[in-house]
Amino acid sequence: MRFLLVILGVFCCFSGCKNPTNKSIDVSNVKVNVIVNEFHKDFYNATKESLPKVKEKYPFLFPQMITDSIALSKISSKDEQELYSEVQKKYKDLGHLRKQLTSLFKHIRFYNPKFKIPQIVTIQSNIDYENRVIYADSLLLISLDVYLGKEHPFYNNYPKYIKKNNTENHLIVDVAGAIIETQISPNNNRSLISNMIHEGKKTYVLDAYLPNVSKREKLGYDKEKMEWAFANEEQIWMYFIENNFLFNTKKELIKRFIDIAPFSKFYTSADKDSPGSIGVFIGYQIVKDYMLNNDVSLQELLSKNSEIIFKNSNYKPRK
Image 1 (tube, rainbow, N blue to C red):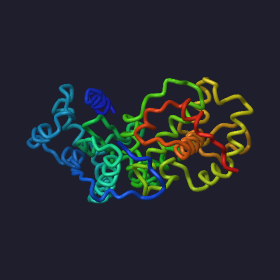
Image 2 (cartoon, rainbow, N blue to C red):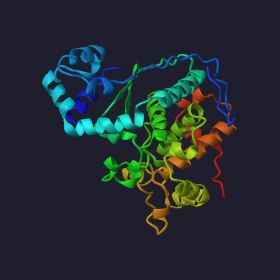
Image 3 (cartoon, rainbow, N blue to C red):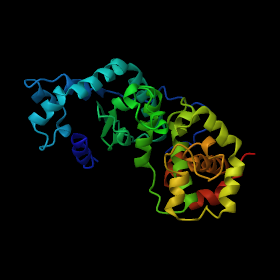
Image 4 (spheres, helix red, strand yellow):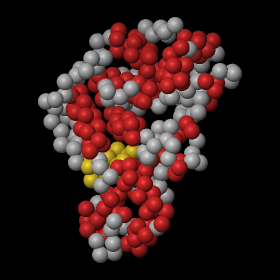
């Protein structure tokens, strides 16, 4: 963990578009060159003699405080090698990942031709699920050990709502999400409605960047919880209105309805059936209505503040 935290500190230093529709767009003529650098493989197969070459190839992963002795200790660790072995079983061939990344980058460039393809590096983070993907403009780190499958025994002690997204299918969603996070204007309004719309904007952009990925996967909901969200959209909206939550700035509401959780907290018997982060779903519905009712490009949406989106969305929950 100390090794990863040091690396995280280093990465902090790196640092005309159409309105997407439900129809697929043609990105066949968009040119991208995707190269995946397998640091996890180079590092965990390194020896004392070959380690200097690994350090030369990935200098940004070896800050001065990471001495050769620390690195070699990690390489020889039984636990780390066992984890590496499981990663190799799942990701020996990265052809599918390259295909996913190629499609993602083509779609991003379709909407933003100036987007630069980052240097892509696969790593092991000792299952640090809070830092699954790190994107810093010219660098993209992907922790493969977080995506071994939700039923993998290494995740036995993790909460179900966390490990349900530890899958190969969700990896590309996290990559796209990390990139979107840097493209979208920050939200300085602390109200619940503003935070819901801010998160909803991210999900809407995910639709544009990952058109072939299901809504359920993008939101991180189970099938049953996704169905619950659609079936109860009107009741959820009325609950927020009746309790004067929309323009409330209490942090408690963010924890109850925005943050990742096993379920949302209405404090009713229905809580266990609801998905966590239900506010993201409602915000997504509002943004969809805004884009449907206004002539706004995807790039313009990225910079629109939540108040304007809400006011001009004419949002009406589906019954």
